[in-house]
Length: 194
Image (tube, rainbow, N blue to C red; front, side, top):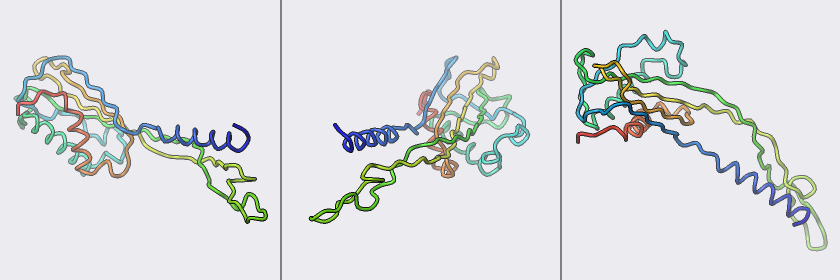
């Protein structure tokens, strides 16, 4: 490979590697003790989310209600039964959410620019400057979200099960259907009574 062909090959490889980036969820589940299918649960009493200084994107009543609805739907689908008194529950449920902003600088192909060569047969379209591909730096801003869902055994006050999901999030991530899917995926390892 010589000259322009080598440059085209190199640009193609860079663009191919950039396209391989993983943005799907990264899920980790830890279980300390057996959880009986059909157990009762209640929300673990914790201080207000707003008092903990959580990101305003999730520290509002609308988003908190959607998250609780998604968790309750997932537990219900597994056969767990909610009780209103935490003292009467087998399991106590809590969740935590963290958002981390990131910025990446990436190379972007700017495309063909003007004629590269003209001769007796006409002009041949060119690439970038002097017939070579042109690359331009571009800043990409995104947010990674981490959701932790804990089930604590009421009798021992020990963490019985934890799921941690990490993935890229955006403004559509707070839609009820998206939250339902995230928490349903997180709960796949829980035993189901149905």
